[in-house]
Image: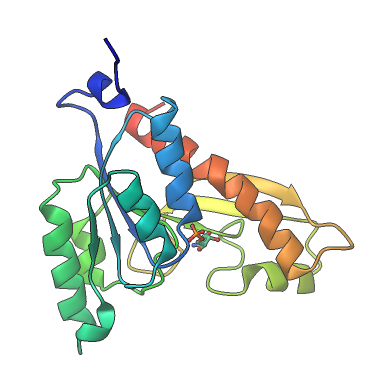
Length: 201
Ligand code: GRF
């Protein structure tokens, strides 16, 4: 008999919804970790706010439920967030994972998912919240940089850190070379952080 990975999943397997906006390489690293048996979760859905997000096609081909909720169709941020939340809640997730999801979320949304909404940020928080983290780290003369997985709270990039990964900053680094080295770490860090949360290890 051929056993599929899903055959090892039980009713108690933590359910995860992943939100993306673009290429989705972190989402793909999470899917790969599930498929190689190192991450005991069920990816219930991948949802994008952008119809052209490359990651959506990957998720579809991987047989994962997908949805697109285009934020441009909503005049109010509150309405978009409510629509997202009602879609997410149909999957009864234990964890909602932001993986390159490029929208500021309302406090209401964030509080609705208190303690089960996480994000990956390309910097060693609390340093370099916000955008252009790699260039800012180089400009600040930092010798190391990295990525953080953290709980999402109402204040941008300020929630409690779950795990971090560090890389050295080389004298030859540009924002692009540094971003690539950090991204490589992100792809290991995010599955590891999710694993830590779902297994409470
Ligand atoms: C990553 O660098 C992540 O840290 C940041 O947005 C980027 C998303 O990349 N939040 P991807 O869509 O996962 O490839």
